[in-house]
Image (cartoon, rainbow over all chains, first blue to last red; front, side, top):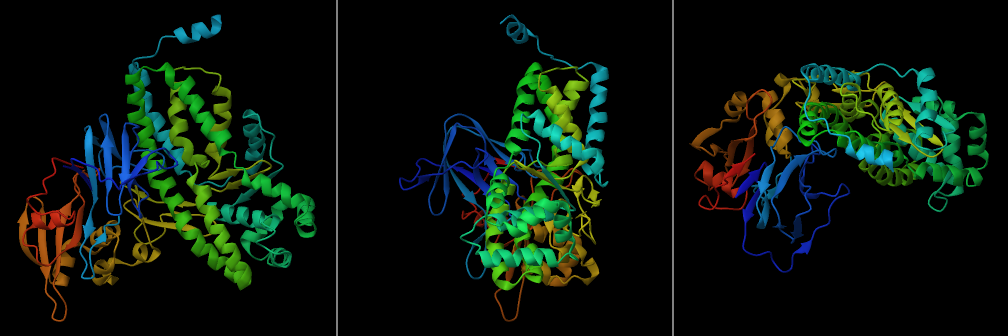
Length: 109
Length: 446
């Protein structure tokens, strides 16, 4: 289990069958979460990772060790979160949520 | 063949001499200052450089060069120009004529003034009289095809290939760490990125209002919706950022000037470099080049974009951006004095980054005291606070710290609201990821 800010990476055994492969963004990155106020994103640039999405979570199939980075659109590392290594295997990406009396909502940064 | 062969055999530079090493901070300072420059553009100097830039990339020089006081005005002018000259189906002839009349009649307005004055008589007359005709189609094409790819992306790729490849991996990484990233952190992360994001977010609102005042409702609504999508498309691309591009131009300037690394691309690099230094964000199109002035004010504190009490970036036409500690905030948050703030402002803020800034401005201790929060638990994961209300469920928040320290060595605290039934800080943090305390135990945190 690894954490980069509001993103938690958990090792899992399987990726759900109904998960659909995610598209890379226009800068050829897998974007796990995009900061609304900062424009900074949790991204994977390496091509040795495939990302899949269900209605509730993102899953990663990491083929070779890759790095989860926190970058701007110019791909410059932010000072907020250091990169973390992703070891080969299947992972689930959990976004942080915040409690409200009306139900949980995703944390925005 | 022999030349190519020799080029391939050139041995790579692996290490810096102490003199070369000493130049790194000099270049850092110099290029940072280029990027933070707030002087007006010297048009006499810059206008001929535009032709040079286009020609250096094998393109025909643009016929029209337009200058505006802010990137926002540039985008609005671009959008208006494009919409008066194309999209015939969407913008009927009558509406188009109305818009042009209004453009012409509202010369007291600075933006229209700037646009109108720069178009020159032939274009003005054509715009007015021949809308939808030949010119319309031409200008439409010109404004659709952005040339940033040919001007900037290609150049950057070639520099990487021709110059970057002459350095050993270790040295390239060293320079990357000591020049590109730190300059980029200041010029791009602190200035370019927030500016880009704000332009996308706010143009539609601010300029929508501007349009409302200047144009009738039907026109405004049509234009507004069409412009919104266009702004986003435009700014999502790698624009040409003028002096904010100095972070990567400085990196290659160092390699060329200090390490004496040569390449065919150098002459083109110099033209682009010298021009970028002089201007703000610019929009190159086939026959039109739209150039923004640099800001008139930039406020930084501890290497972060920051101004408590006023705009952090301000342009001559009033277009502004507010930021605290590198995070873009509303004018209200930046300009409300701390002693005038109510702690409910913090409770009501949904964005955790902005809530953190409000808390820092208000004062954490003052917030906890004013709001009547009680500490109920504390462990290595955080501190749990609870506030009781007479007529509502308790507010329970966990105070956590960001694991990556700030430049000053401190860790930023955040407050996250959690289910009032949680008993420990560990359980609280776990619950924000939908886990139980037993399940939540990250081995790496950044």
